Image (cartoon, rainbow, N blue to C red; front, top):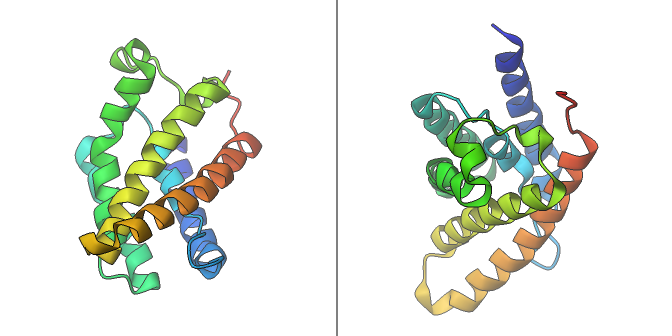
Length: 168
């Protein structure tokens, strides 16, 4: 097992533990709940095997569903953003992504911020649409998506800034 694989496995386990033990118990006003476990998907290596990445993202969501008794909504949301990730990377980073020269740890704050916003909003729209699954509650879906996304984006950016790697 190489260093990068060990890092990914460690990141997976730490994010799952923090989400399950701490963050799943935070629910302000019924709308605010940070979902930082998706950092695993956000920070996966650019050149990761696509099939392995989709399966590991699905397993991540399945673990969240198991601990949250949420019936598969996290697994679906994680799989969708894992599938959507190359589109988001290409949209935000352009040629750097196309030529595989992109290192997420070396990006400017603004680029990371746009990428995180795009991925978190996609995840939360899917998650809350499937969780509520009723078009007559579109305002509730929008509220939960907006407020949880804001908190998730803030916490995710803090984690990315505080725990960034120096790969110079």
